[in-house]
Length: 122
Image 1 (cartoon, rainbow, N blue to C red):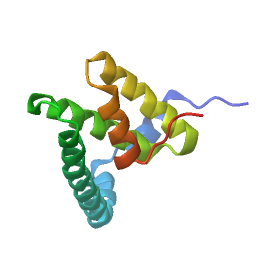
Image 2: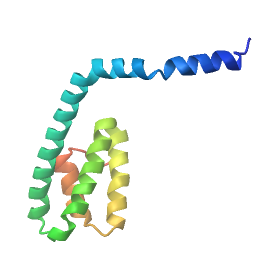
Image 3: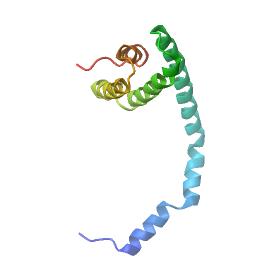
Image 4: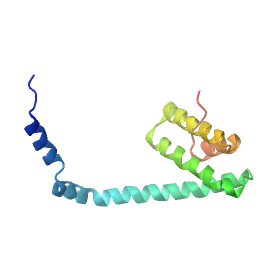
């Protein structure tokens, strides 16, 4: 097995990090990237509005709303990346973290089940 020389490695590194090529690739992807980001932001904003309703139903103090919304954002991100039991376990870890930060588990569970549709781990 041959080993690439340092000159070959440097040449390949230079090609891979050519700023003009990177700009061309980014320009080609820009419209799709923007539309995906827009859709995600709309979904996130809608989720936050629904979360406020659920949080309000439990009578949580308004000063804690940002913390509950942070839980929602964090769990939402995990639920987009993972599915099934893996997502459920990841969200449960996040829930435990926020319970340790003195948020009420019943509110977090309601947000998880109603908003994020992540059920308990079996």
